[in-house]
Length: 220
Image 1 (cartoon, one colour):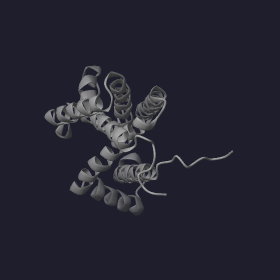
Image 2 (cartoon, helix red, strand yellow):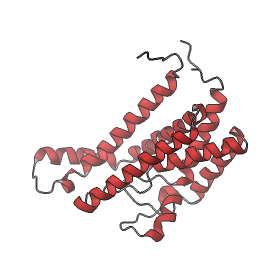
Image 3 (tube, one colour):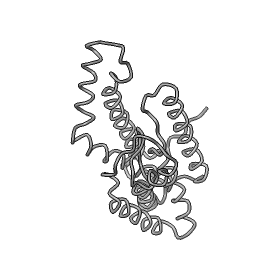
Image 4 (tube, one colour):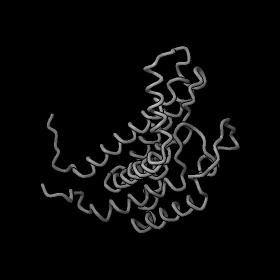
């Protein structure tokens, strides 16, 4: 099978890789911090050391700032990818399907093992909504419509102060709209529509502006 890489956009691939690595490290730090809760019967100095290290990273102020930066990069690149794809609805379906599978798996894990890993509306869910909105914006007016709607979503997110939303420890269906919009926080991974879908829309605008010919900006 011949692999054609001449149309790959190097800087986007590199940034995607960086974003994925940073997100994995971020989740690793949180997972290490929760080791004693997941394995309470194991009294091990190794687990204690790992948990202490994980907690020192997971609950630090600099990690909180970096978390928002690389999460925004992840969402922004999803928008750029939507601007370059020839099958936006297929892309939306794939991301939505992955989000649904992840949510179902985490709910089942908590149902049987009570690990505290439930994800109802995480980064993939927000990304799916953003990608679908990119599709609608493209049909209704193009990149400037996407930019305008994206800015509105981001402004709404900050006006709702999603970053300071109170946490829920027990789920109720009546709380779902608030979880999706960003007025209440719930789950191990939480990325509300406001402002996260807006970041995807801004990425779509940047993709259309920076890559009209779908070619790398870096010389070969």
